[in-house]
Length: 276
Image (cartoon, rainbow, N blue to C red; front, side, top):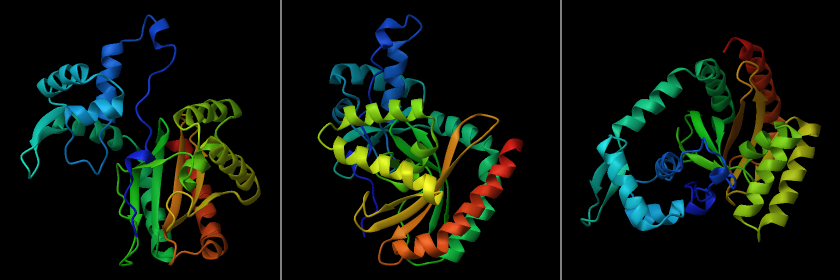
């Protein structure tokens, strides 16, 4: 089973269309952050050419950005086994990420409930937040099963085709959802009709079942269901999915056996959310 994330799963870093019209917008800073955002959990290192491709910027611009980010510790020089040179994320990024995760009390509240569900379902249960057109795992619990998905904290999955991403879209306000759908459409116009139908069906499914599904629609051998909830204190939306190899987790099993437990988990977390 291939549970890794292909480069196509995460959209190329994009710029807001009205950025140049906003006098408060610092383009150089935004581009530097785009470079950092281009790194994925599977990347050991990236060179300037690949960063230029992912960010949609000239290589000369990328070279200046990587030089500056390296000077400040956000990137480090790296070399692969063949001797090719590139960059990897530096300790300054780790410090920022650790500070962000440390203040996410919801992770500590959710983890024992997630682990209980993972053990019972023999699947992987993950907590995620949205970043652009992806969901990022911020907590992960596995069962003792020998075979689960090869994803971990920091992994990204696409918004439009995964159960977690669809649950996020289903819980969004109509305005938020339409804005995100326009961005999804702009990223892949050819695939848009199928993606739109999948999202529309997911919103209707959420209203009926209280969860969203993705049965082989993200990766053909992966099945998952997911719920989402809005945190009152921060108004942010978090999503929780439960999934794994399709041959182990059938749609019938996930909907019939796992769904009630996932909904109960979400209800308990929603009750705790006012305190975090």
